Length: 441
Ligand SMILES: Cc1ncc(COP(=O)(O)O)c(C=O)c1O
Image (tube, rainbow, N blue to C red; front, side, top):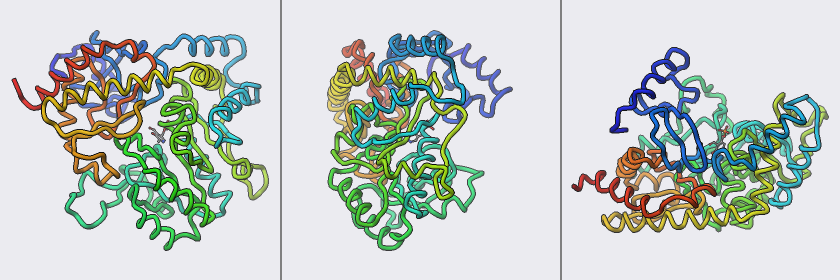
């Protein structure tokens, strides 16, 4: 991918291979022997690699950075908490309620909440609570949605190996080895925005459906979004069937609007998961929703169990309190919206110049770029877009100092610090990157 040789990164990967599978701490960070990125620092909207190349970063750690890297307003709050209060104790502090009350003030869908350490853990908590409350088993998920790395949601529609001309649905396969077939038993998958499919699933399994679990804007599938009518359909069918609606806002929460995706649709979930933007990069997550549903968590023998040693630790909660206060009281999200819009406009000028059919999916704070005539309505539609051209374009951008995921299923993430970037420069490098992708001299 990178045309420049990166001696320091190569040496670091060689060393890391002795210590970790693939030489990385998370398999998705392995980008091949020549392209695996090792960083020396991050600041604002930039990251600098170990070979001293600085990038404008639109990947933002897959979304958590909402204000900017090393935002002093958040970092100082964390330093203050760990210096003056402590890290963890296995007991409660007032910070717990401070953060819950902040979330409640932003998100009317939250009446009660519990904390977690990652998006994965938040989803596990929400799903278990939904099952405990409804006394049912099945979870309906949407093709292309991602809900973390726990066995039960590590089944995916194999759209990569599916042909658009195929009249059969894509095969559902596990993410890899080690996922027991039994974890598939209670999961049913539907394509997004397909009314007939959701009706059929409820007709067949309704009695045992505990919840629909959905990212209304699929942050792991090019920001392809539910229509307003489809979200209403999910709300209505859940209500009439006694099932719950869980919105996974791990990527959209506190990013696409102060009240998350639910403020955009004005449709509320029974349970919601949050993480990422909630702590500007510090590891904090949560799930919450209707008080009666959350009250299923109890010591009663029929109650739902939830907890964890590191849950609601001081680092996480002090970061969340500072980040959420800033998002609530400043116009950071409005700035992000404006910057995201401006970036899409400049990209659109570049694509138009090269006569490339293109469209953008999702909100300005995390938009997907798709080379195709119309915005994909679901994961199968994504297969009709020219994702290979996108990957070429993205790899060329990376080479020129613009970091993004070279896969159009990952959106462009915007943070407040992006307001300082040179848009003219970005348009120029985007033009060069596309010219090279199309092999135009
Ligand atoms: C929508 C959604 N849910 C859950 C997760 C899992 O979060 P984590 O990686 O913090 O476990 C992710 C991660 O990207 C996500 O995007």
